[in-house]
Image 1: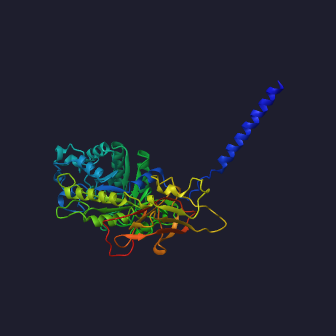
Image 2: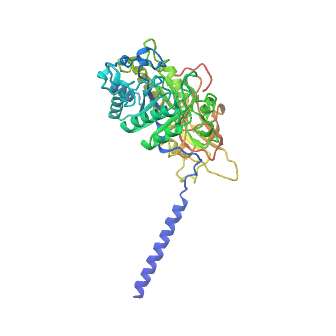
Image 3: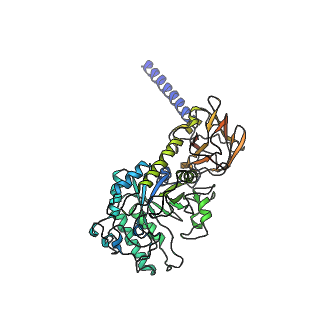
Length: 492
């Protein structure tokens, strides 16, 4: 019996000792750093990763050669005899686009769905004898291709007689908003703006009521407007953001339709209390609606826009308008495909992957799980390099990239932050072989720098983080070669 008790106590002692060792090992695994508020929502993170989304301006303006309709157009002119929304989705798919937004109603008030609240819609058109529904065909085609959908419902309505009466018009607008979001499910983005002629009747839009209704009907949707609440306008229609671009901003400083906030929208605010990332809208053509006399932008123009939108912590909303037949014109479709092919060509190879990466320090030491290898995997949100954090002394945080064979050949530098834990970096510098070539401010989800000249030959690239909100968390870095870039300018 004594031997049995002795064996039991030895077993318990060994078990406790083993448990103590396990607890000690667990305690040695460093935890992630605290986030820096504000933070993005799940829907905002998914939106950011799309990088390029598509706008489709389509309606009576397509047939009148106008950009802004008068509201007096006869619905009978709308007759896209060859409407093929599957072709729209195919074009988007080939361009690597995962979200398409349709102008369900533009400023002229004509509705692309059979609304029960107005006759100024497809109901009164000659197309399909008034029994068609462009929005439904659009949703069906996109869904079949695995592409998400968005809707633009213009607040300004130049046709409806209720426009001019705050109560009656807001009731009408909310009725149509409910109609759209109840009939067409899984809308991922809805677009509101303050565009209207300064001479137009003054109407107060009940934006708070509209936004509440949207979230009640489809809670996962992102709402776009000058003031969010989920995505903000960048402040212009050139498709470019400010060189400094924070995803944070103070919504209390914004008003939809205000003309004095464009610079603030473009740059954001490092002290902002709201996570409200910017969307850069631009058309592939000079106009937003299709015009026979217009042609798509050159590939070089589109790439420049990409670097100054996606490459400046934004999402690019590229408008591709269907023509009078009801399809995306071949030259637009070809240019979009060419655009996607060029992006893939530039970024398919990351020279850093075959290089040696050295960092200033690492959270938790070499076995801590926050090492430089995290910057080379496919997770650009939750896998990241985190330097050691010393609250007593200000540390110098940096990354160095050394060529495996002694030479690095590139002309594009890419840096990405782990924005799931907040946007942090305020100021950084990039050196090539000891020479300062870039003095940057914000990074955010993605920052791209094209360097002057055809190609840079170097032994080492050093990225030094000067100022940040907390420690910098870098999810990905890249050195790439852009064969389409022949700059006459300095680094951008």
